Length: 336
Length: 302
Image 1 (cartoon, rainbow over the protein chains, first blue to last red):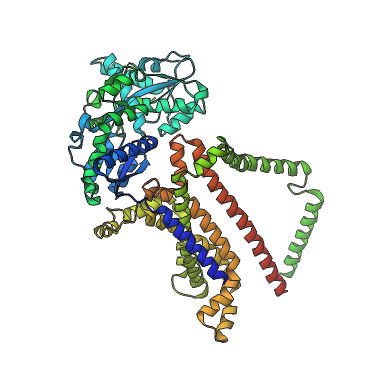
Image 2: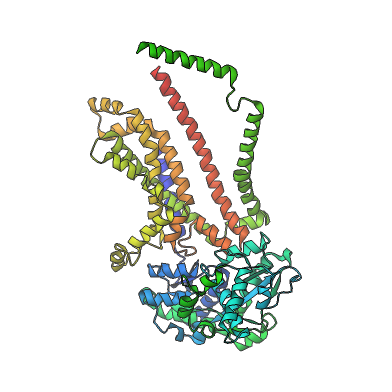
């Protein structure tokens, strides 16, 4: 009798577990694979999209979210995670979906406006209360009395952007003078107090361990950190020149086709460019292309000259090869 | 020969008397004893108690209401459900597997028996991340087995069957490891006696083997369950991190933390810590029962 009762309890537990792991019943379901800090952004956008889609087609849709480091997410998709769309924070991670599995077409960047990047951001500074070191631009970060914190460009896309931003600044400041550029970037790298492996670690180093005069990360992130630690009275500084950090999106055509979601997946990404969605994105501290929304948020986003990867290194492929490959420029400049 | 033995014996006794009179053992002086106790206690406090306390302090730092809101969040509830679901399947699978394996290697002699005993420990020796990658490479859509399954539209990785597979792999030694020494020690005489009296295989197991091993078995189950609930590395590789679908509780904690939702992360951690404390409690109870059983056995022998 006792065993029977135990068995019953077990069965009940399993049924309960299965019930919970079942997806909510909707007419359609879409899987969006995204980078790790975009949860709230897409939770909010998915609500908007579900409403839009129901008005348009009369069908209910549930968008499921997968979040993680975007290189790892790309790897999972190559290994069989059946995501319909990707919304990443690195162009190279979508490129790899084409190179390693033909999961997206080669010309994915031409499928949607603005090189398939519905929103963008740039690298900005978070400084301590009152900006005691008066940090305004990249040249201040090479000053002897300033120590900076940002994630390691070797392991983090975030860090790579910061490196490229500083490099791009140096290219502008010392045109055609490779030696001066290298020397500036070398000094800049020397001023780094701690190289963490990722953005979250760098934030902890700067905020909780109190190391460094300035934290360099995405402008969108800087504002999240401000909101999370209101008592520290940090200040945001947007340099005059910075790097254009794109947030590219693409339909994973092979998977979407298999899931019977091709049309839905395309609509999901196209809707990101609508005025309403752009307003929503701006609310999450991302810069957008829609001019009306730009006007509305002009105070929040100071003007900044954005350098593209094409201007700095020609292309992502050559940037990876020249700067970030083993023994590349980054390795050379970091040698003290 | 006899002389030498006597001399040796004499020496030892002399040596012993010298020791007891002239030298105190370490820890006999009160100050050594107390400083060691203080050191151990402060280490335990710093390394174990303070972090444990901090989990709960952080979890409740937003007040009870926000704690409840975080725990009853749709995705957190799902993560709890999935974690318990995977554990509820893992435990019986490894229970059967462990008993079977222990029975096999302690009751039968066959070539490769010693090798098998060693192989059981592979999941302990291999890093969980490597285990996860291994399964991904085999069962992923580019994998040797996975690509064939894909043709039949069967997906194991990035869904709960994949999570279950790696969890079973990581936790499979626990039950067998607990049973093997005990069953070796107890020997097979009782079962042989049962056979001569005409018991069937099931009767043997039910009436003789099971009562003998029950507490060790429960101990193994407790450990299996604890690990199944808490496993991070292997699961993280094969999960695909789909919210409300393949996110287990430990993965959910990491995700919330990455999201700057520290209170939420610690609220979920407190659930895991609660399960761990419960496990420890059950474990101590089982250990106590085991000790009593052993004592009873010893008294019988005398």
